[in-house]
Image (cartoon, rainbow, N blue to C red):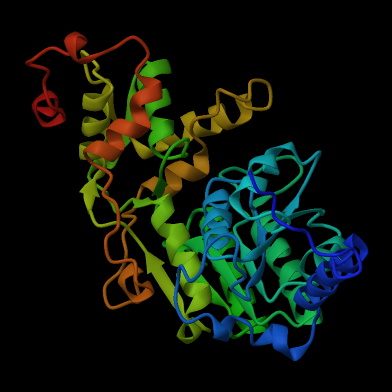
Length: 387
């Protein structure tokens, strides 16, 4: 066994020098010089390099602990981006995000959206900001307007002070100031505010997202397992175009590394356009239910149910599986309109479909002890029940 000869001590770099070089490199990465502002343009395409590389992108992801946020952080980590993950509370919700990038590439920063100084600190070293902040229901602390409009205003003002070059905002496909839904109104008002104050911002208007632990399929699994019936608003005839959350995260990453997306609005939807009653029928089929408990409910009755469940949530948080605002949203089709920029324009050419294997994967944890042997061969479909 021949041991390799070591260099003389005078020729070996000292630990202090190595630490100094590493610190200098970190300072160069975090500097606010013009080199940082043009760093995104140096990334030719998505998935350049690996987690141990550096793509030139330093991104702050607000809402990183939600449903979409972790997937966005993971995709940015794949291409060697440095990601700042602002958090509230004790930070336990974002601990898993540390594994999505190389050592030191995922930086957790405490913040309060009502404190402009903390928001400015979160974006001060970034050249990209992604806003995934959202909530399915209003709370005592945050109304819909505070969640979307006020937070967007605070983030935009902080980005302008810090010289951030790109902002990507997540919105809803049906957002409109004329909508009955306060949630959709708040989204539309936030979109207008963003583009008026920051014209180069990119908005992704997303249909209903699905995936593990989502708030779309999981909600109807809760109805199937806990409620006496699953309400079908408008007889379930409205159309939906659900999109896989990973496809949305891919679209966000591609938006950042493509320079021609500035100032544009994209409508993000899945490959399938389905009737809501067919989605629920497929869901009940995958749950191996003996009898489908789907039942048409008038909109007024559904709104009263949503109002009751929303207020009951104050006492029992796990009970609120539907709100009055969600009923207002579910009245209408949730699909991508024609003649707009879509997933294909963001180079996501093979989006994942909901029906089939993906539905089976999502509902697996909701089956309980039910299996294929518990499902009767002749279970009636919804169309047969309606007749």
